[in-house]
Image (cartoon, rainbow, N blue to C red; front, top):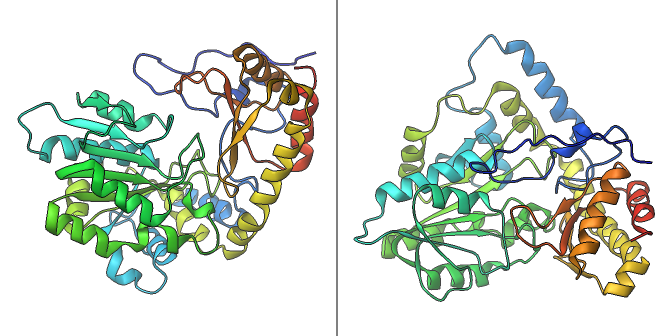
Length: 377
């Protein structure tokens, strides 16, 4: 029998974008949250301790220059030349604040006699906060697969939730082919550090020269954004960063950023977590293995064999995008998972993909509970 209570609405659906991770507090028999794409390892202990210790300084304002957290993150991103790069880096209150800042800047800066246009990546769907910001800015929304260039491009790479991924050379070509001169580009690489220990080599963080050339030759402003709350499992702390094409661009965003948007515990967490090499190594070693276990167990379900479920996404990612092929089956799967204390993310709210369910990578014992709950599908 389910030991859950009815879920009150935590969203104002007219003004907010739906997001996973809200149900756990209403599930009395809660075991594990499969609805969010956070790291299966949980929050790194050393960084969590640093955040706790920082609470004792809450009678002081956070450092206005975001130091030493910003320099520590810069060294994580650019180990050999971070001193030269850090002036292009800005921390924010998760990714959402930084998305809003860039869209506002684009709306103010781009010169166009017509309504400015916005386009997502060429995926079936992607994280909707970009769409919401563009809609709020009254931009004209193009289909992701449109061949028309746009004033503003926002691509999530790897894509959450579909799991699609463009390697470095491919995404550089896509950017060149899809944005107008004078435009803005945001590439969200929040899930890209899961790639491997060599993630930097396939990341736009390594492409400062490419960003500089885009701006010098075509006046295109390229921003690389990260939400750090997934890889380090700290969604409640709200930690994000953005790499700007130039230090001047960074100063422009800082000018319109709400003061003190990153609090002291969050900065202490950042300063500590980027030095936890063991945690990252365990992430790279364990995620793909556990993802394969999840797919193997789900594939053996009678419903999977009957409906021919499809399991989508790159092997290194922290979730699986499951097409259950049948809306009624997907709806029932969401209900059964919640009743078992292991909520998953329905593909219907926000993404409008009613046959899909997103399932996070988790430890085997928790996966076994989910699989048991789904045997009756």
